Every structure is written in C-alpha cells, then in structure tokens.
Image (cartoon, rainbow, N blue to C red):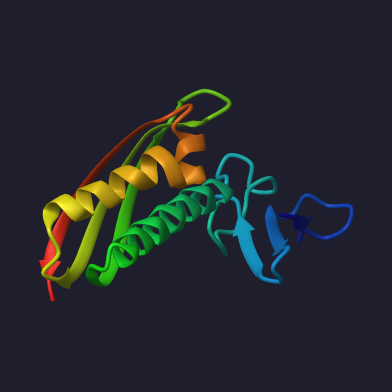
Length: 149
C-alpha cells in the first residue's frame, strides 16, 4: 500500500497548511489544518478535513465494511449500516486518541441483535486493522441500534 501526501502551500511560504493525498489505488483526498487564530500564517484554512479526522473516518469505514461483510456472509438480510464515531484526544503532544466510541445503526430485515453484536465484536477483535491499531492508545467502546427494514 502506498500514498503520497503533498503540501499545497505556495513554494517558499507557510501561508497555508493544506495537503493532497494521492493513494496507491488512484484516489485523491484533501486535508487541511485548523485555522490558528494566534498564528494565522501557520494555520490551515478549514478547506478540508483535518488529518486526524481522516484517521477517524478511515477507521469508521474499516469497521462498517467488516460489519456489513460479516452479516452478508452469514446470509443476514442487511440493508444499511452507518457508524457515528466520537473521539477524545490527549491534551499534550502527541495528541493521540485516548477514547473512541462507535455507535452503529444497522438496518435489515429480520436481523438479530446477537448477529449484529457478533459482527461488531469480530470486526474489533479480529478484522478491522484500523481500530485494532488505534486500540493501542485509545479505549474503544461500541454500541448499536437495530432498525427493521
């Protein structure tokens, strides 16, 4: 897996903190820093997600992918899956994630709570490399609601 991240600021200046990531699969992702009121020339312009937001989003995508795939492989009639992630970070550098809560909303026809619970657990214990990595610094908790289609 490869990725190239390039600064989009003007050559020789520190006027902006925007970056473009070009992934090995041929996709592009923009990232930007937060505006810094104390040092406006060093902050971002709020034009794209923060890099750590993309880490959180990628983790959500990784675990939602697993949950859907596990349910489908179990021949469950899953019709929708979303996960809302909320995270807390350390106050000092490096500001790693210290707690992440993932709340899943899984929609399907005749899905059992046990099947969804098992899919979420398998994702977090075995398959989702992103959440397993983040689990080295963050306490990860989960919850879910089941919606009948």
